[in-house]
Length: 169
Image (cartoon, rainbow, N blue to C red; front, side, top):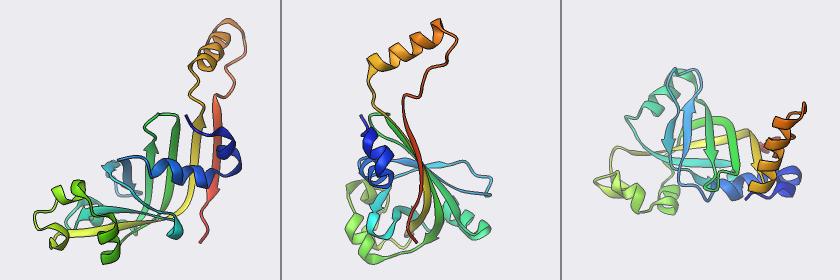
């Protein structure tokens, strides 16, 4: 269940709270013609960035080079009561301190030579803006609003909060 008051008053804080608890989201490069692909996010709120492990020969890295790297990242919380879409510049940044900070058994499974694998690199999504959608997840409120919408001429009222915000540069 998402915090609707926080969604209204401090959507950026809610964004970070929710994204840090997910295992994957969908990342893509605008204008590349590629579909978004599942990636594991590693949150860096102090830098308004999300980091991703990838391979130097990945489609994403090729798309950055071909388009300039404007990217979109979408995520749905585990509870499915929070959705977000964020955009920003996606750049290759093999920051060894970030490799150390975010390295884990899941990342290790992809790289035969571990942290020193020659095909390992990081992508840094430097966030510019985001939209979030949060709902309470109350099944009774949902059922009531849907029933009301089906038996009256009024469509259901919103079931949560939507907010758009920009990250500080």
